[in-house]
Length: 261
Image (cartoon, rainbow, N blue to C red; front, side):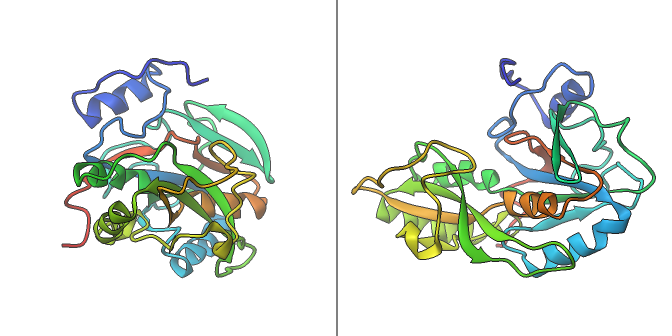
């Protein structure tokens, strides 16, 4: 599915054009590192309000950047003119909580009742912390935790986090820096022992199982945008469309500008 060679795009418009024309369907993390990367969720209008309230009650894992009018797939804020039906490289589709596979165009699934939401992704700040001298984590794990989120209607579930490994001094730098990225999950929710938050290292949602944390690194945990996706899927909406894992939407927003001063 993701065997497409990752090209080098001169700008985000070239990338979107390639997605729209079916010439690129690969992952987007680090593809255009200066721009804010977003998670996408599309729900029927009848279920979108409770989901939006869920996001407002849980801003760390669900930092909403743009909410679209019902039936309107065109971005006005994050990427003016971009079409949510065609301008992501790959989408994941589910009906009543059951996976329906992935597609590269959702035009035939879009209706006048479709409501799209874009939420910031923590992959946005990886480039920033790397520039600050923090060595990249060998992997970015996505893990379940025992921390509950605040319920709205039928939307409820545990907080899902990303875990990165780094030196203790680097963890301080990463914490200070990512606190500026409020619309991309902000500062970590936990640093240190995974057991304190019930992080499930043996059964990661993404990444290889972890038997033990190396003694020379500190695990650092950020709230993750997979949280609202899993919450929404568990609510079993009649139709839900999201970006496929690792295939987030690249916005026009500059990461170093769309953050706190």
